Length: 313
Ligand SMILES: [Zn+2]
Image 1 (cartoon, rainbow, N blue to C red):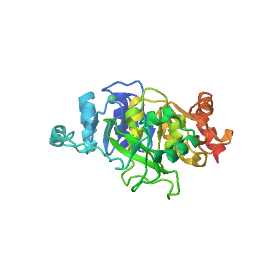
Image 2: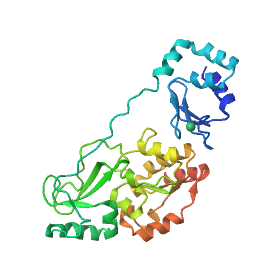
Image 3: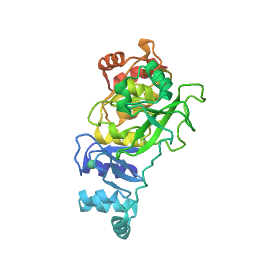
Image 4: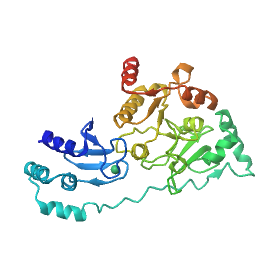
């Protein structure tokens, strides 16, 4: 039955690309030049670009198919029209969950201020030792906490697309342990989405200090894994953003999984190899070094992906 369904969909929308359980077709609504309509034969369809979605594939067949195709589809799905009718009315009425926001620590002092208190000296010297410049501090809105729960930590806040803080990382610069203490909230956020330019190359790194080196258009994963359901992945596919993967040297498998996922969605993807330069993560490099390696990195296609994969074993 799946084969028959696919045959009908192919006659309507042309060839498809198989990704796991899903099939990528050209979207008949936004007509993006790449296959962006993701079809799951059991769960429905969704376009990554224009957002058109339905849990009921028959809607596609009814709209774009001829009488025979519609009859045939119905014959093996046993769908009755009344279902389609009520789904049409109510199917798209899903409530968006309220976006996650997080208050910055009460003791947060911005290092972007002109007159800084004496307690800021250690935080500033720590940042200097990591190569973070005054310009970086302004751009990333970096601050610190002299006291409180996040005492003696440099704080880098994240802002969502509407400008509300939705996460932060707090890195110890003194004796506080553990090194990182972050708010206990879900991590399916896009760190500093507010500042991301989806039309430019985007570098994906592991940590915030890596992002500061690789940036300004860089996003840290903060230990999370990108899946198709991740907000970051959805935005990347929606905007067709060219991606540079520059994860830590010891995260090779994670990096290759990400590369493969991006290739499956026909994205332009580059893998920045920092191991050749003796670094274990981007944060250890200078901005100039990173920029130089990045600009010399060729795009990965399916052939070079296999080569990478075999040499990574
Ligand atoms: Zn579309």
